[in-house]
Image 1 (cartoon, rainbow, N blue to C red):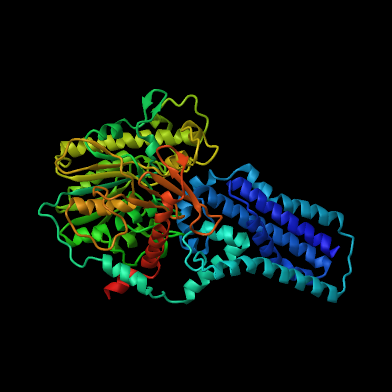
Image 2: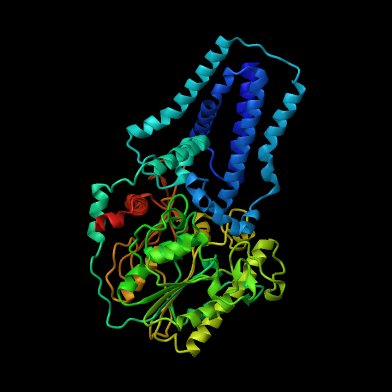
Length: 603
């Protein structure tokens, strides 16, 4: 009975992993199965030392705790496409303010992850009077063999990786790759260990290679152009590139932004590079030209490190700098971060009128027009960074503000999303008109961009069906593309720029237009003649006319190369030359953030 009962316990646990993979649409390769089995053996082998009467209740408790962690991972994955990490503890309190968005991720079928607990409880009920006597010696032998089997299963692939000198374990760039390589329990165990080490150990020093790269690319002196225009940088919440030019039942979804293409540079192949920090990631990437962390947000984990940011550089060149965000000043540590990266002023919810809220904050119409009033109090030249919020998940909007005919659409959240997007577009149009009326448009450098996707692009979604996603390239474009508009000073003609780029390139582009040298930044100007390498946190990237999709179930360097124009798979060597460059960039960015690298080389 000791073998049968334990085998049944393991089977229930493994079936939960299968169900989890089905719900998340993630792979379940053989190695992943074996690593999960190894994790279960290592975690539960000690229970075989205990007599049946107590052991069965311990198994029931372990199954329940397993289901609890799996369900938490499931809900987190639906929003971030990543696994929970102990590094996220610092931002858990911040998530309560956007809880409505997370509630939308919970589905009834998720609770089937607890079905095994019910099944096991029923078995315990029907076998409650049975007793099974096993000698202490046999229990010890069984527990020892089980534990040893777990060690062998777990250590074999890790030893193989070490022999091949793979860097994914000690220089990991993706939590999901760790998850596939280590299994569920292995990932969470290693993640817990890393978290404990980070608490008790001081920052590591930069490697010689990292220090050399930083010193080579860091400019000590900056010199501005003779003319310094006012700069307006506006971040639009959850604003996808697919919305531009889209029509809903014959009506333009973004008429004002569509019109803006006629008088600005519009980048049609521009991508968000955010990860778990979402909106805060977009802010960080845009203002510092560094990559987001693989776990958590820089805003909550490293708010006081040195980053060589855009506002800091502009401030050194005579600009008055201001951030504007109509929410609580301490939300996501923005008060600390904004001051640290060089903003002289931070206008938060207390600096805005107590008017109609849409979603979590003041509506974007009042936010943007009031922000213009704040700009008029600044000393010229000024740099203002505005974070709009109306189109934040779960896309709540009053009925009297819903102006689109969405007959034929089924998903309630998608319908609310489109309504908020139409409202935000009106707010942008209203802002542009007011800037022109106040003579604040013509001479200024003005940038509008989307921060990240809507969270409604997952497989099987109505948005995905409407966009007619048929292949990996279509899915990538829908999920990653966001709009970027740049209005150049004293320029009224529009142009569509097809060269690809990402949020990491915004700061270098602005500095290029101002003829300013820049400190160490990982992005490149979108206006130079060189092809941009647009990398993403999982190691995927867009380069020239190719899109590389990293395979996280394999070691780094494995993936699929696509031709974006034909949307077909092409020879791997078309992408191969950029793979290691991307991994090096991600690791170097992590070193700058985790080890406070820029501060160390400036000491």
